[in-house]
Amino acid sequence: MVAPATARLLAAYAIGLADDLLVSTLLATRAPVVLCPAMHTEMWEQPAVQSNLATLRGRGVHVVGPDAGYLAGGDTGPGRLAEPGEIVTACASVLALRGGGDLAGLRVLVTAGGGTREPLDAVRFLGNRSSGKQGHAVAAEAAARGADVTLITTADLESPVRVQRIDVDTAAEMEQVLAERSDGADVVVMAAAVADFRPREAAPTKLRKADGVPEVVLEPTPDLLAALAARRPPGQTLVGFAAEHGDPRPGAVEKLRRKGVDLVVGNDVSAPEAGFGHDTNTVVIVGSDGMQLNVGPVDKRVVARAVLDAVVDHRSRR
Ligand code: CTP
Image (cartoon, rainbow, N blue to C red; front, side, top):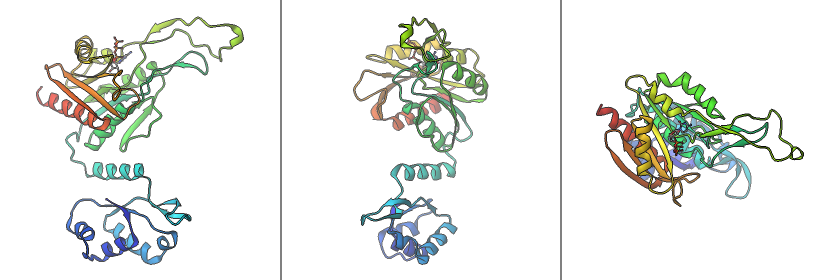
């Protein structure tokens, strides 16, 4: 990936001029190449530049951007380097397109969410502080490793590349989508913080202050993961999460047994560098085969990698 790719770089690469280390590297590799052009608008619009880019595109080089916006000289227009997130997404997509990852051929279903939202009235809901970042990272990592991924989410986060996304709000909606989709999955990862209780009745309109403080009666939601475990097809791997206060190991081991699943990823949501809302996490992964692994504090994407490694390992030892 070359970011920024200048007009000179495009020209040298297009004619195969190996006069510096960068172009020599590009000419010497068989790896896919992503170029992110950045230059002033007048340069970007030059037929010479566009022609070099067309030549490179024709040879299979991937091009991201440029965007239109503020340029280094204080002027504005097309030629601004694409945003880092856009570049990373494009690179992940190029790598995924190459296929052949260790999860190729596996259908992976992931639930994620900023917690389910259980309606109280027409405008209010009961929720929780889970951000959905860890579940989205698991979906992104599984797709990058070649899996066919469906993500059921309540979070307002970007969709990972090559992932089929289904948005839901409530535990009941998540239950419905799981009922439709889970039978065909080889692996189900329940990273969503599903509500344990919901209002028994949701008022059809907004509750008014003038009508006094409402008395809200709660009822339990169904345990979706335990239900999946009870009717799982042969060969399906089930992964649960356990949000704990303090050492997550005992709770993770207890949930592993109680819910009848293969792996549980426990985290201490009270730890400063882990858990809800953070980009990093510290977890313990426990397996029904006795495996216990501490991971972190690391980026949630690295946790996702460790979780999927544990899934691969667990499946290989069945
Ligand atoms: N879960 C679920 N359905 C629920 C609640 C939780 O499927 N109604 C799943 C979560 O997605 C997670 C796992 O169960 O994978 C553990 O969730 P957690 O909230 O930590 O545990 P609970 O079962 O709610 O137990 P407790 O309230 O005792 O912590």
